[in-house]
Length: 229
Image (cartoon, rainbow, N blue to C red; front, top):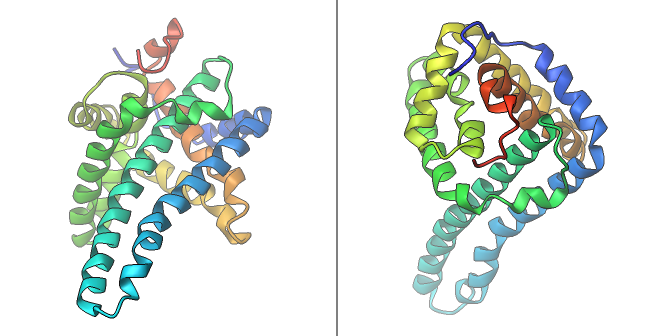
């Protein structure tokens, strides 16, 4: 069951900030690991093929360059799905008042396939929506963002998670879209300070989204079920 009277609360962004400041060390450590691994996953394939690219046989070098691009996309998608799942589970644990650590971000290998599928589906739908005067694309991302905490917190499939998110947010669609846009802007404000500040602001994306998830699915927090149950 869900909370049928739940509505989007912009106060959740302020609550997310309070949660972050009360556990800043853990979140900063998790975000540092997040960005370091994202950067490594993006560059490893290129580094591996540099000798071949520089080889006299330019045709072979070009082929390996294409392989590196494909490898980068695949590896980055896997690593990002792993880390996003870990971030959401970290946020859910803190909201439930459970002990947390930066290492929690790596406790989500089981989520990788589902996060990849969900990200691809939402990405494709949003891209199609953006082709039609942008607004349909915004509606897609603004009504499906609860799919990620749903998957992090339950065994629900990607399609069911997306459908469930849309089902509970469609009645408050405009506010859901506005909330996600504001939350995304606030979470990325740290990029202004040479990207360093994003370590402080990006956790708000995971915490804010998880707080909205709690508002719409309060039964998941009544008995404090462990993430993934």
